[in-house]
Length: 152
Length: 64
Image (cartoon, rainbow over all chains, first blue to last red; front, side, top):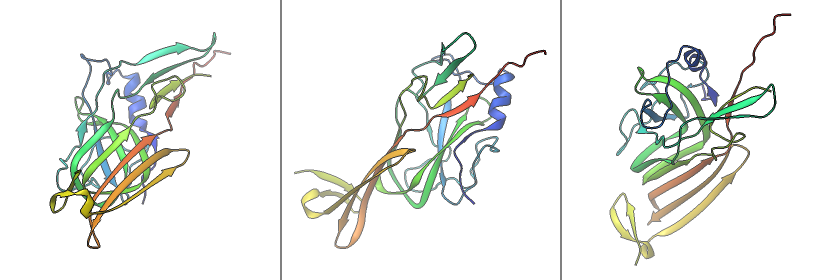
C-alpha cells in the first residue's frame, strides 16, 4: 500500500471529453487534499475520496482550494511537437493544523466536476504539530510545470 | 521576543529547543522545523517544494 505520483487516467479521458476547464476566473475550482502514507492513490484514482485522507485539528475534509491565477499555456517546440502546461499560481498551504499520522501525497481534483481526480503528487512522509504545511509548486514553464501535455 | 504557536499555546521561542532539517532529492526540496519543550514536540511545520512535473504524452497517429 503506497501512494504513487501519477496523472490520473480518467483525467486524460476527461480531457478528450472536455470535462475540465482550467481557465483563470471562468474555469472550474480545483482543490488539494492530503493523504496518509498508508493510502493507495495513483493513476487509477478517479475522484476525491475521504478514504485514507488525513484527519486532524485544523484540517477540513476535502483540503483547500488551489489558486489558479494563470490559465494553461501552450508552446510549439517544432513543426511536429509542442507542450501545453499548467501550474497552480500559488503555494498550497494548510495553516494551523495538527496531522499526527504520516502523510505523503496530495490529490489535485476538480470540485466543480463531481470531484474528479486530476493528479497525485508524492513527497517524503510528513507530520505536522500545531504548525503549517506548505506545498510550493514548480515553476510554470514548458519543462517544469506541474501538469504537462507534450508531443515529441 | 519571538512567539511560536505550540500545542500549549503561544510560547516564547527562547523557552524552546529548535530543530531544523531538510531533504533534497530529484522529487522535492523539503525543509522542516520543530520546537520541543521539556522533551515534548510542541510544534512542527514543513515546507515541500515539488520539483518534478507529471507529463502526459500525446501523439497524432498517421494513416499509413
